[in-house]
Amino acid sequence: MFKKDKVGILGIIITIIVLIFIVIFSNGESNTSFFENVANKLVMPIQNGLTYLKNKFNGNDSFFVDIQNLKEENQELKKQNSELEQSLRELENIKTENETLKEYLELNQKYAEYKTIPAYIINKDISNYSKTIVINVGAKDGIKQNMTVIADKGLVGHIVSVTDSTAKVQTIIDTASSVSCMMSTNKDSIVCKGTLENETELRGMYIPTDADVIQGDSIETSGLGGIYPKGIHVGSVKSVSSSKNITDRYAIIETAVDFRKLDTVLVINN
Image 1 (cartoon, rainbow, N blue to C red):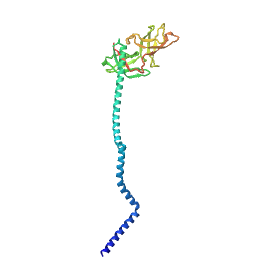
Image 2 (spheres, helix red, strand yellow):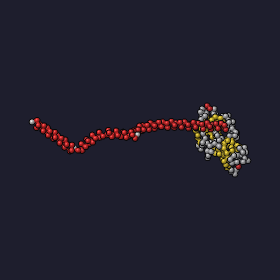
Image 3 (spheres, helix red, strand yellow):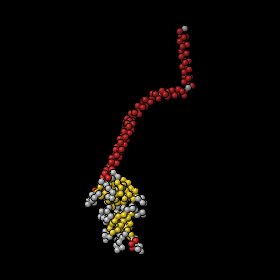
Image 4 (cartoon, rainbow, N blue to C red):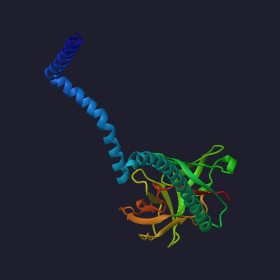
């Protein structure tokens, strides 16, 4: 009896095993995925370990560390670049200030016989009719109306109005300007006036009939008129325009000062 039961149980087990194999083979695709998943779980740690060892051996494990280091270095370089740009701007400012001081020193040495106040131009109005400039010194600096203004090359103009901290200068190229001058060669008198046509030229008028006007002759202030001191360079004779009436002739005077590039000036206060 026991033997029969044992055979019956064995038959059941065999039947179950057969059924399992049937299910396995009928679902081969799913089982393949299952086995693949099992294999991946077993193989991947091994593969990752081998890859790590390979990278360690080749030095590739420092890749991500290097990226972080590069980011930090980049930030540091940006900071240094910003500091260098700031230093460069400060050096440019110092350079500009030094150049301005150098111009003032050269002007003071050139016009040592005058007591002067240095200034720089903060505004220009060089239009057809009004040719004035504004400088950064005023009444608090001792500036007064009618004081003479000069530059490195020669005469600029005179003070026409003053505030506490600024002053307006009527330049010699202004059409309303009139400067009593003389020609350096023959010492004859001439009056130089601003023109509408040009910002670098004056018209020399009231030339004596017996005066010999020489091209290239230097024109200087005569000291007459009560504003400009004697002997300040104004410009040079560029050409002479003659007419049938000798009293109508005039000279074109090229100014010594280039008003388009004028930055620093001196105000004569004696």
